[in-house]
Length: 306
Ligand code: HEM
Ligand SMILES: CC(C)=CCC/C(C)=C/CC/C(C)=C/COP(=O)(O)OP(=O)(O)O
Image (cartoon, rainbow, N blue to C red; front, side):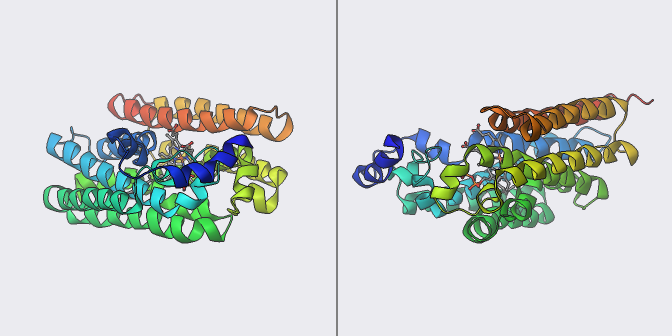
């Protein structure tokens, strides 16, 4: 309570100009972008049996990273009021008033333009257009409209965050391939249990900020059931790379083990939750996705067949 009471007053008393590079770095959501880039890298590697040309690798990841970071900064600006009302986010640079909306937008614009030019000139136009569409999907469609409009916000908005493997793939081949869409489908299915686990933990804050997240509109019990069902769906979707012949035995075993872990947490969350189970499930979701994509990579370079 004391924390949230200090929220609005600190936003007013802080003066613009006291920002450091750390504030700008924080606005890019670096940990999220790192994981997005790992999924893009895996998309690149799986697109070809050969090694990926280093120019495509470096410039492709730089462009996708810059546009993802720009999207994250726009999210900080658009959401600064909501952010200032929640304990998890009240200290963010724009919410706190350390960085003005104008400066943040200039920063986002500079990264956005640089990223688009890099992708369009040195990678290919398809990747530039698709990455820009993902930026618009997350920064504008999700943040400005969906987040405030419907509890299905993150299901639909999740498509933008799920795009990077496809962006990596098109960076290498210049074409959209069904296998790339399979990787997108995995992240798309992973996003609801990833986010709703956190939303359950933070339900009161979302309610206070009047953001219609699923636990606020439909209750915690319903959200836990949704997490469990999406986790079952994710288990099945993750079998597809093996069943379609894109990946092999190492992936099959890794995927089954990682998804069994996710199911364990989702089951516990629904039927035997302790106070920290939702947060544990959220943290596990991040480790799960990271390892799943590492396993895809290992399997690609060591294709051990059963
Ligand atoms: C619409 C889709 C998504 C929503 C609504 C969402 C929501 C969130 C939220 C609210 C957090 C907590 C952030 C914080 O405490 O600062 C978070 C953390 C995180 N998310 Fe997501 N997420 C989405 C998609 C993704 C995707 C696609 C990835 C990566 C592939 C991802 C990776 C991460 C990581 C790595 C963290 C931890 C960040 C940290 O500890 O700093 N998320 N997510
Ligand atoms: C070009 C491209 C691939 C763009 C996608 C970029 C991107 C940063 C996607 C991540 C999704 C994410 C962290 C959503 C959380 O937003 P939130 O507003 O619900 O969470 P918050 O309250 O922590 O800000």
